[in-house]
Length: 240
Image 1 (cartoon, one colour):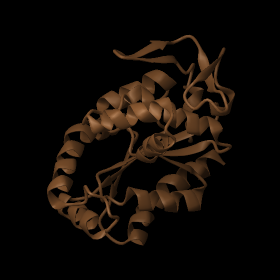
Image 2: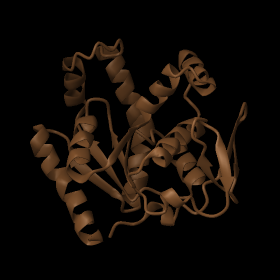
Image 3: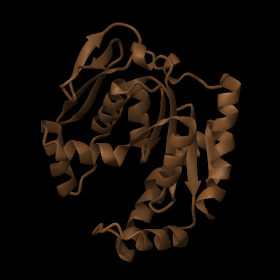
């Protein structure tokens, strides 16, 4: 049965970005004010637009094919695709106060605070008429995961992990020719080591929670989607 993520999204926690990190207040729900990208309007109780939300995390290393499969899931099952990386890049391009902060953080080789990424994700959820969300590339670490669960008061309904051998991911990234300066073999291998160190503990956590669907990400696009399809089809059938 589809678990309604914000049936457990009790009260989105009040969140204030400070130089020291994030502070949380567990007693108020917030909705985004239109036109104010990262500011909140305080409300009491559960955020109404999130009450029936279904949240799926999509995890996998660079070149695992998760982006391609997300497009198929959107087309077939009507989910809204939210890429954490795309949201951060969009905020940088918008040249907002937070965009400037994100850019400076990346330039300094630091990690963008989890609270900022979670706020961007929640803003997109709040602005959408959809109630089914694929959150792609997040959480990237246990710290990300804990921040999401603390801020939203919820866990994902289920998690897809595109399990792909390193040599296959390296081959795919080198062949996709997207013009990215980090698409060279040394950088790719470093990214994969970071992924293994930070992301796999998240995978292990959700596997222990019984929420993980491990997808063998080797094969054609259609072959891989045939593993993905039953996960969503079974949930939709149960919810009907």
